[in-house]
Image (cartoon, rainbow, N blue to C red; front, side, top):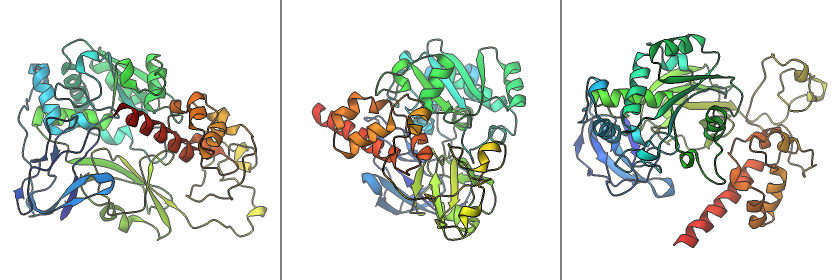
Length: 441
């Protein structure tokens, strides 16, 4: 239990909500401290009991409520909770999901009648649960479901019953989780199980939708455009707690690991806990890079005062500061991961690979090797899009499908010239979005 939390007033999908507390107010864990019924958003809750010490501005214009703990435990239950999921009607479940903040989870939010998603409940055709883990240091299903699958299946039932019409429920899961798959197959017949090989970026929303449901996402669109809502395993467990106990999303189970970590751990952390409280004592040294989310497409965090939020599920700590190695030319590279056959590791596919956050080389001009094109899951030519963006040819970039990019980062990963392809492509996509917004105003 942290002594102080910083709870941002934008948690997950949706807009920033205004605070409904003032400095000096006493609050209880689970109490709503920010809400706006007139915007596409979900309520934000106090995650510890104590006193509001500050309401501060955060990056990108968001605000946060700082709460200092009074040392007490427990939490306040939200209304609309029902012990038995089967006795709830769609409105009751939708209200519980909204008031608890569960509706803000997922890339597009979960649809309720409270305007919590970019898709309406009546437009949903499929609920797809993402239980595929394709990145290192990801949160494993066996940890989340260590107490069994009953809470998970009841959470699925609650999400399914929140829709007034019949919605298909699909669970895409790592094919190595054989025991979990067997239990799910024995539980409910309406759950469609899809065991998949854990190959990056299989767990990306777009790739998963195309693989499991065979639906192609429209250019520049999202899975919600084809009637699909995607949630992960932890979100389903949060839904179970919200509907049966009235518990808001106050804590998260987080996977912490990496070459810069002393050990790989799974931690239960209160939302609003600063990252430094979690990782400062668990790093090997001072030359490390902290990445929130996956190491391929996650966000680098240089400010460890940033708090955990509802969407945090993994933190990777990678060693850095080793850009030059002594007599590196004499080493065969048995632990180097490379797309080419330049190192011995190419002939040792099952050998443990090394990992750090260094470039391991230097930036060079593009040599048109086409490696980035061969690994792109969206079928794009990243090297060409990079040229368009860096030469201010945004219209050409859009014409060549830049908005189909799923930000997986594979192009940057395999580039022998160390070009920041994904970074430049993201910049181009943001310019196009800004232009669309300006034209609509």
